[in-house]
Image (cartoon, rainbow, N blue to C red):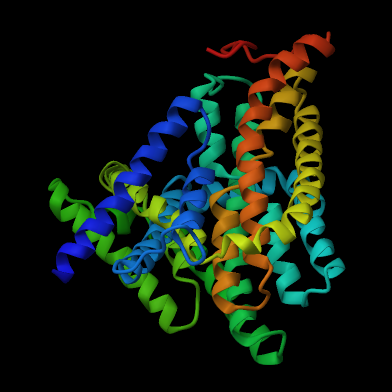
Length: 397
């Protein structure tokens, strides 16, 4: 009977998430806000809290975060990341100043600790690669001239997260003491060494792992990723960051095979991860911080818009393309929730989780809408033509 209850409850959770995914597809909105809402509804303090599957959902959520970051790492090689940083250094600096600072300042104004404020800075800093990629694909703007710039900004932010997350994890474990700073410094040194190592072993490692058997390749890559994540946890480094670095170290046929084989698993466990964030929050905790989330969302939507507008202008893109680039970058999502998840688990600030959920919910909805409306608004108010590359058009394909 106990197993039947577990299966019934787990099946209900997955079917519910499937329904939400269909609703999001029909409405043309991201799934993340709906998954967060489901978590709030069926978590502690919700309408019908989970009873028998809480342990599975917790493990599934951790696997979801690991797979999210692993799959993100597959999109970039260490060489591409380092080259992008060199080429877009000024854009990266502006993005960091304009979008990390509001979170840190807001945390300090709220009377939070330095570490909690730094965590909030990470939440406000990084745009959602997943949401933005879907917006670009759905709107047919992959070939537009501003799209490579958008992607380069996302790459830099993702690389910054690979450095930021282990530092934050070290501070959360050891606090702002010498021990905590030492843990953070060791984590940073480990990331740098792994990236340098990846430059040398990338091709050889991928050849060693690759197999023409889908079954063998799936088990090998998934097993190695989970093993590295577990080893990272033993050494008090973020498991998710370890997974990101494993993804960066793979390339060629091994990376292509991993994308095809692990994408369905990622989608399943990522949905559980986003729902789990909501499971751990009491819905009654959100209204007190909702005003702060709205103000912070307005401010950082403006700073991210400014980042995209300036960067696109610097690249010689016309006003309409600048507006599209700027609006597209507004969305926050998976990385912001990942940062919040680390901070909430450490219990450094009780209001951080509810504030992060409200903030991400707002911008995960507003971002795609702004990206969709940016073109008709630009057509109405901006008369200057776009500069285009010969192989692209100004209009979505």
